[in-house]
Image 1 (cartoon, rainbow, N blue to C red):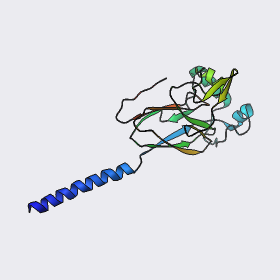
Image 2 (image 1 turned 180 degrees about the vertical axis):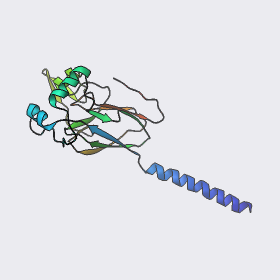
Image 3 (image 1 turned 45 degrees about the horizontal axis):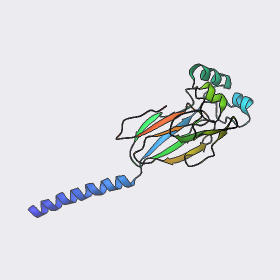
Image 4 (image 1 turned 60 degrees about the vertical axis):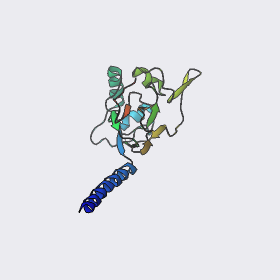
Length: 194
């Protein structure tokens, strides 16, 4: 009887270990929604055709409304990453989904800063660009090219990003620099760096 009890206990332990390994093999995923609420008619009239492509059946924010809110608050609440901060398990892959009508970037930065649009940097109180977003060349902002850490996501687009293990990471949009997210490993305290 003792050997049978030992065999059952050993089987339970082996099944638990196998289950733990199977769960480690499955890469955890977390979804980040990239949002804006642009009004195509007004944004395209001011900035250019194709700037905003979205259905406005449930309403939208006009370009003048966008500028007014940006001037008052230094950000526009409808232009954001959702959520704005998360804790993730080791090996998590981010699923990025654009739910807005404009192109945005999802750019890993060491410290939050401005992007590559002077007007939006100044209005949001981020006059100095994050180096991962832009360089100043002869007094002009020059955007950094797309890369695996500087992802350009068009309206309605999707992308994935694999996180480095056990590292706090920060991302921002290089067009709309108030769009930010801090991602912290589950075993660390949340850390917000401006």
